[in-house]
Image (cartoon, rainbow, N blue to C red; front, side):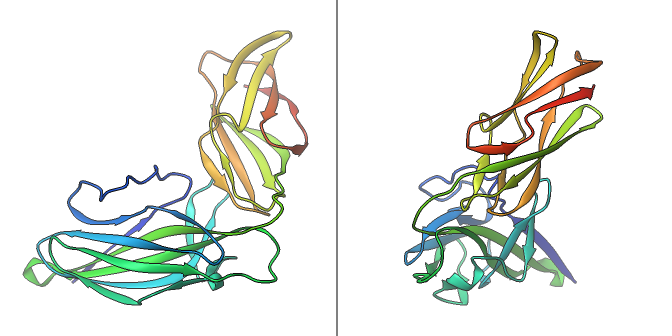
Length: 245
């Protein structure tokens, strides 16, 4: 019998990796994400804290995000063809740390901007009683082609989903936007009184992609209100909405 586990480390949800190996049992890979300028390289470390050797297959695939920012593994995305791995297979002994070199081609002739990709590591080990365990770990790689940076968000419709606001956003720039605490803030007003300032659920938005930014509405706010979006990067589109909460 085979047990398959998938760990996809989303760029929007992974905390910055520490300089050393993560202090936990099992299999650990770091850094958890990488931003590489075209023509550069990095090394992924694989720590095996199990009691048996682990065989790890490595390949470059694609990464996309759904409307709500959750990662999806796909065959190829904009940066996949630029990413190559030094070795397609590595064996890591118990208690040891293996390494995989990742390189990004120069990308000559390509327009500047960010292009997402993913390095997928598929680890196999034999468990007890004939049970095989397979773990897949995805490391997001952001390929950055140097040049003029264009940042622009286009705001769309605002919808009320229970006690949650969903703001449609399109990234019409050429770099990935980290939509966090201060990037797209919404203020809830009634008349001249500001009832609340809401910060978004953090997420990434790839270039030329559409997505939804989510906000939790406090239970104390009910009835008709006006919502204003305050954005920290250049933006176009609607900025004020009348809603019933």
